[in-house]
Length: 99
Image 1 (cartoon, rainbow, N blue to C red):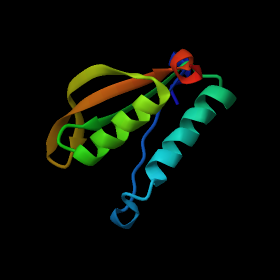
Image 2 (tube, rainbow, N blue to C red; image 1 turned 90 degrees about the vertical axis):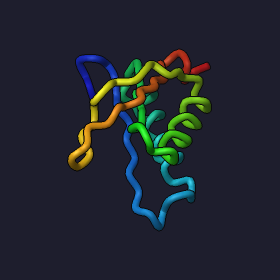
Image 3 (cartoon, one colour; image 1 turned 45 degrees about the vertical axis):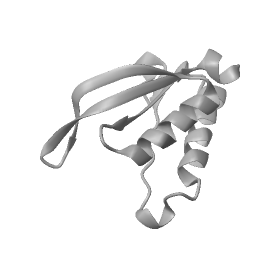
C-alpha cells in the first residue's frame, strides 16, 4: 500500500508447481477488488522485470481485463541477485476498473 499516493502495488509470487493454474490471476483480481472497493484507492500498479515472459503475459492479461495501460519502463529498478533489471510498470485506475 502507498497510502499517501492512494495506490497499491500488486505482486504475486508462486512456487513452480502452482504455475499455470490461474492462481496468480485470481489473487491479482481479488487484490484489485480490495484496493478499489474496500480500501477506496485510486490506482493499482503492477509490473514485471525484463526477461520474465511468464510474468509479462500475466501482467498484460490482468491489465487488459481491467482496462489499464502501460506506463513505461523504470531502468535499473529491481535488484535480482547480482543483477539490476528494468521494471515494466502498468497501472489500472479506479475509472478504468469500474468501466
